[in-house]
Length: 227
Image (cartoon, rainbow, N blue to C red; front, top):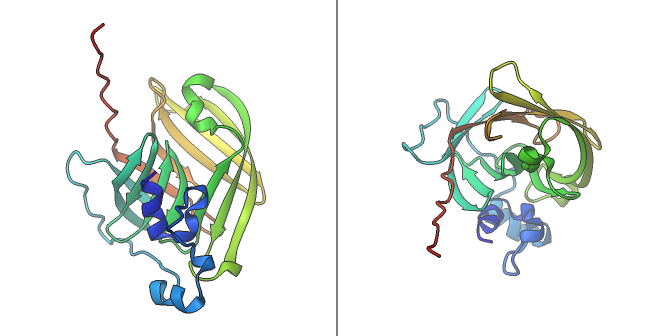
C-alpha cells in the first residue's frame, strides 16, 4: 500500500501495521535525529482564514475543527482507503466515511483498529437498527515524545441507524464509552447510504472534526467483458 507511506512521512508514528521496513517510527529514533527532522515543538498545521477552494471536479473534503476550517484534497487512494491534505498541512486518512488517522493537529489520531469489520462500512447490509462494536485507537500529542502517546485506547460503541429530520437522509449516531467517551454522528443519503457529512471524535479535549464531502471520489468504472 502506498498511501499509508505518505501518512508515515507526515506522521511516522501513525503507520501502525502499514509501516514499511524502510520507514523508522519517530519513537525509535535518537532524540537528536527526531529534533533535526521535526523540531522540538509539535508539528501543528496551519488553518486558512479563508479556505482555498478545491479545483473544480477534484475530490475534496471540507474540514472544520471548532472555528478553524480548511479544504483537503485527495492525495492517494486504494479502494475505500484515502489520504487527504489541506494546503496548511492538516492531513486525514479515511476508510470509507470514517477518519482513522490524522496529522497536523494538537493531538493526533495515530491508528484505528477494529474488532471485526467497521459497522459503518456495512450500512447497506445492516439497514436501520441498533448495533454494537469495539475498536482500539492510538493517540499522541507529540511526534517526538513517546511518553505523551496513548496506545490501546479501547472503545465500546453503540451505533443507532435511523431516519434524520431531512427527507431521504439517514442519521447514524455512534455512542462510544470505555477509555474515552464521545458521540459521533454521520448523515447519509438513504437511497445509496453514501455519507455526506459527519462529526467525528479525533482526540481528547478537542472539538469534533466536522467532515463534509465537497466533491466525492469517482467510483471506478466497471467494464463488462464480452462473453
